[in-house]
Each structure stands twice: as structure tokens, then as C-alpha cells.
Image 1 (tube, rainbow, N blue to C red):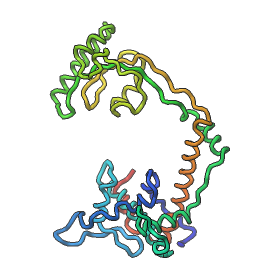
Image 2 (image 1 turned 90 degrees about the vertical axis):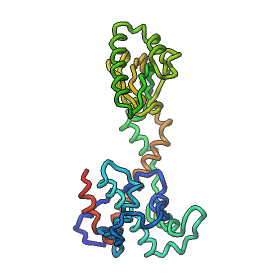
Image 3 (image 1 turned 180 degrees about the horizontal axis):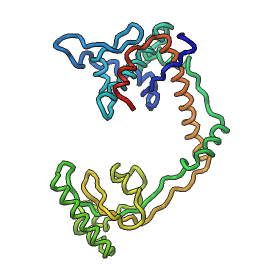
Image 4 (image 1 turned 135 degrees about the vertical axis):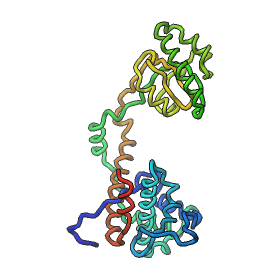
Length: 303
């Protein structure tokens, strides 16, 4: 199991943060067509990544990269390489323990997937947090447990398609002009909405009603929830164009009592413990099955 004095290197694992079961995440792409990665004049794709004696080719990594979108190709490649390493570590351990043939596969999983499920059920202990654990987390993180903030908003949309450069320049200029006029005459907002807005809300004076985070386009949502009560001093840009915005009222979310969020906290803490246990288990597998080449791939995608 390796040299005790050496500190094992932790592999950040995408699958741990997934909402899918590990068995599904680890193998959901195994039926993807093979050999669709990059080719080199008909020659086999090069291999720089190995788990034990198994090579993982650049073609396999390229195929997996479509499931690991990132800001750069290097980060996508590193994410794909990590996922393939985890999948192979689990597959080798299932094979070593002869679990794949011992577990009947259901209609929703292959024999290998069933083996991995049983492997993890056997090796990773489920630990349900106690009430005291949950209450302690609640007391230490009270600010996280509030009902959603609400804001009451009116807007005037000066519409322009995202790829219409000249149209967006005109919309921005028009929105700035309306903001300047409304600063002097705020009572004209409903009239301006009817005359200038490209949103159906113009017939209600631009009223969007009460909003909470996540109910509107993300870029609009992020900006509007930073505003104070009153007319925004600048137009708010979104994919739809430019918005003249007035926040008429803000209603901060009320604190939630412990009983209302206890189940949510318990699920969160249980997941955290399981993630740590899984990380430790995979570190042990890395000591049993040597991983080579991953460090070099990750070095090309620094944090």
C-alpha cells in the first residue's frame, strides 16, 4: 500500500460534486462510440496517462472532454483525465474483488455498474448526522438560512439582439437618455414604458412585480439584486438589450427556524462526510494502482 511516510496526492474528483450516483457518473459515457477523438494520419492516438498497466489514450480523453466543459481546453482535458482515472480505479478494484460477476445487473445498470455500486456500498460507510451535529452547523451558519430576498421592480426594455452591435449601441444610448429624463421627472416612468419599452409589461407601466433570485435572466438577476431602492443610475444590460430599472421596494428574507431547515442541513452534512470518505478511499486505490501522467496533465491547467 505504498510508503507510509509519503503523503499521497489528492485528485480533485468531479464525480464527487455531481448530483448523480457515482456508479452512473463513472460509467454513463462508457457506451459512447469509440475512436471519435483526434487521429494522427491513421496512427493510434498517443498515450500519456496510465492507471496501473492500462494506457488511457488522448483519443479517449478527447471523447470524454465533451462532458467536462471548462474555460480552457487544458482545464477540460484535465477534468476528463481525472474522470477516466477514477473510472479505471473503480473498475480495477471491482475486477480484483470479483464483484462484477457476483452482482446481478438490473435493467438500469450493467454488470460493471452493479459491481461498482456494491463496491462503494461495502467500502463507503453512510453516516447520518445527529441532531446535535445539525444544530451546531445551523448556529454557526445562521446567515445562510434565510428565506429568499424579494424586490419589486419596474423596467423599460430597449430591445436589441445580442449580435446586433449597432442596435445595442443605439439601445444603450436611448436607455441612458431615458434615465437622465426620469431622474428629473420620475413620475413619467409609466408613460415612458408605454412609449418606449419592448417588453409586454409596458401595458402595466413596466411592472415586473415581486422577484426573487433565479426568476429572471441570470445577468439581469445579478445586477438588479445589487441595486438600492429607487431609479437605477445606469441602464442594466442583458441578452435582450438595455433596461431602465426602478426598484420600488426591497423585502429581505426572514430568518428560517432550525426545524424548517434541519432536513436540508442533514442531507448536506451527510454528503460532505461521504465525499471525504470517498476521497480517502480513492487515495487508497491510487496507492494500489499506480497513476502516471495525470500530474503532468494537471500542470498544464493550473488553478
